[in-house]
Length: 412
Length: 194
Image (cartoon, rainbow over all chains, first blue to last red; front, side, top):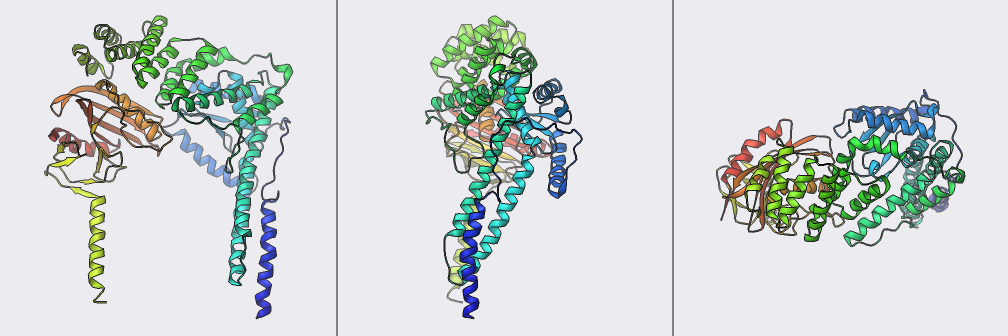
């Protein structure tokens, strides 16, 4: 009996540290290294291999059917085709053919690519990218995940880690029955989760490197990848500053972070970009043209996030890069009116005025201008401006309310 | 066991009482004060009161559950206050001293987009109507919620002495909105401020 008692205790005391060591070893999560090679061409009619991959594809096929019928999908055939075109420009015609692109109406910036070749782009990305090259950098990054089968590798890593922890917990319970207690299991749990997130971050680094290598081989300017991250950081910076929050940490890596820090990504992307390609076209004019029909809606979705600093930065960055247009002036007017401090209303009146100067038939600019004037106590000009709004848009959803406001003394 | 019986009964009664406080019956045709703001309404059917989850000056009622019909009362909100509560890092739009009635649909839209993480929201018709004896606004809206469900809403509001009073219904567009709307209309019609 004493012998039997000793063996499991000894076994657990040895096995747990061994398993703990395994948790932090490449067995659980083979770490990838940053190399910028161009991946082999993707075969368009690829069929999944093995139980895991077949299962992932089946799940993704269902998710894609759901997405195609989703109310959150932006039904924009021309813009969707343009996204696919930019992807092809970035990764090459031989790779992009099998990809199906979808635009999800969400004002945050994101994109993803599923194992079965479904590309999802969140509409907020269009306001952060300023040209085809920047959009291509994001799409190329996602395509890198797809081509390297990162989802499958992450799934396998996660499963191995969970299995390891399950067995370790059994051993840990056995050991405690024999009066043996140590902290190896807790340490192992930390190691496993830490390794899995580290693995995620390395996958992101690899996808970044692949994304830039696609741009290097394309006709687009690869330096745009780093520029995109500079924009993202500047937006977050401004957003935090206006909210009175601490400046975001763009360099630190949190334990559970599944992406590398933004500053590292910007630096790596800049380093990997081909110096001789710095003078290439970045496709600003074509990008602006493709986006134009959707710009008012994209700006409206962004405005309603109630993020004054971030939104003001984005509008200004677009204005400075692409030139100030009526929709941009109008959006800035709305932003300032909605915040609504007296000084904001003065600025809003100015921005609406510039929007109207560029587009005298922009009805909503008259609405915004009239409301800003009314709130500033400029009742007579407000009545005139709001009347113009009703002439331009007699069927407006709030026409009856505006008509009432015109007849009032402006207090409500 | 006999000695324990009174304690068991007391615990049971406390439990029942606790549940009643969490989901209070708002009985049909019985006037009731809501939001501690002097607002009194008389429902036409039985509702369930499910607390003030949108802030101290709010109250929520439902018929079938708050995901199927959510009736929100806001009473006496002043300048700087928001239409709901949110996590600390989330900045909600606030009512301003000079907010116009016609701007209230925007305020609600921005609140919903941020607090409920909605990206597809559409304002529908907004028209004047008298509410609580003052000039007010009645407006409709639609949004797609996190489950991909189309939700329709109607709200009636007014601003009295720089204080906002609003009754707001939202329910899935399919079946539940139409089912709840007459009861909402009856509550709005019955609303009085004392």
